[in-house]
Length: 181
Image 1 (spheres, helix red, strand yellow):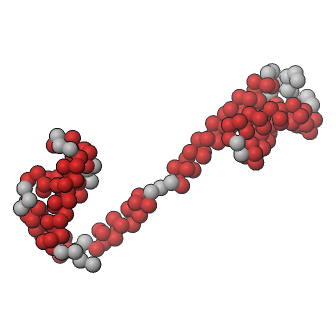
Image 2 (cartoon, rainbow, N blue to C red; image 1 turned 90 degrees about the horizontal axis):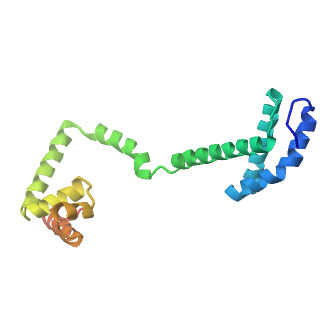
Image 3 (cartoon, helix red, strand yellow; image 1 turned 30 degrees about the vertical axis):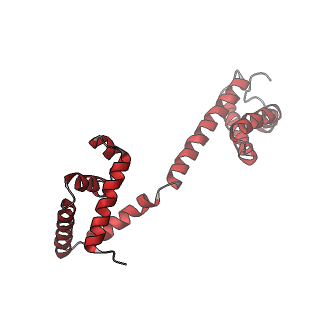
């Protein structure tokens, strides 16, 4: 096929483009996305874009141009799919965090804040009975959300030792305050 120009009628040119490039474009897309209806849609979109471009200017190397359009369309498709997947995959914690924060802020009266501070002070005092290391490890793990392996590296101890300190603190707090069901 020679240069694509706007000299042919739109229908003739569209038929020529379809006859020449439909099969190769389908193969191109199916090798990359493996979903036939989507490959068909992308093929039609490429042919439509090439047809529109040929109305504006002469396309000297149609094969290269068609597959450049196809490659760009495929990149756009993958970018859009990635954005959609990122938007669709929002961890429940993140989705609900704003709601929980709003509820917490609304529920925190000055009296409640004082009660929470007193409870935390009391819990830390109780943990202090176990020794500084156990208290520090528990606070880092439960309140600061540090990973056990990070705590182990920080103190130069084994991960199992960190687990033992955390369990010791949990048992001590449970024995002191009891488990409320």
